[in-house]
Image 1 (cartoon, rainbow, N blue to C red):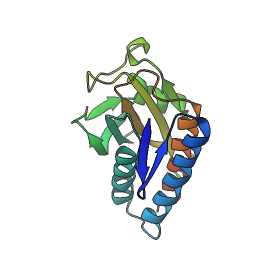
Image 2 (image 1 turned 45 degrees about the vertical axis):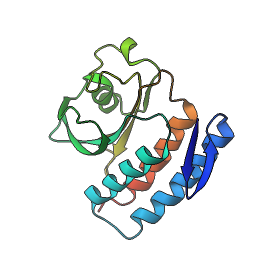
Image 3 (image 1 turned 135 degrees about the horizontal axis):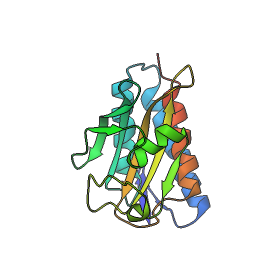
Image 4 (image 1 turned 90 degrees about the vertical axis):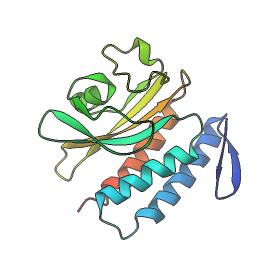
Length: 169
């Protein structure tokens, strides 16, 4: 697979190439959020940056905790999505419950998967932590390709989420 960033075409066929992509994504995101504290603006730009840069995605977006047990849709790119997800349901809700990144090679094999887009085949969800260590949301990536995401992607997206967490007021 290939992607284009800053008019440079990259391949993501090797771990080294993916690392280069994430290095560029971190640099771009750091520039986008520099000096900005508005969480909605920063997450909107982050979802757009990732969606429009990474190959093989059909959805990239955020869900934020509302109360103790429910995620609510935030900024995203892609088709319309489920608005509310209970903690513990689907990949996003399970990520909140486990407080860890979940990489799903085949969503049809994930118990309780919520199919917002029937074309999604693989998923990567990263928790977002607030200043007090509580999970305040998740960053969710979906792909129509099975096995689209790997450990390099998980680490790369986690590094982008850490940049966003630093902008929390």
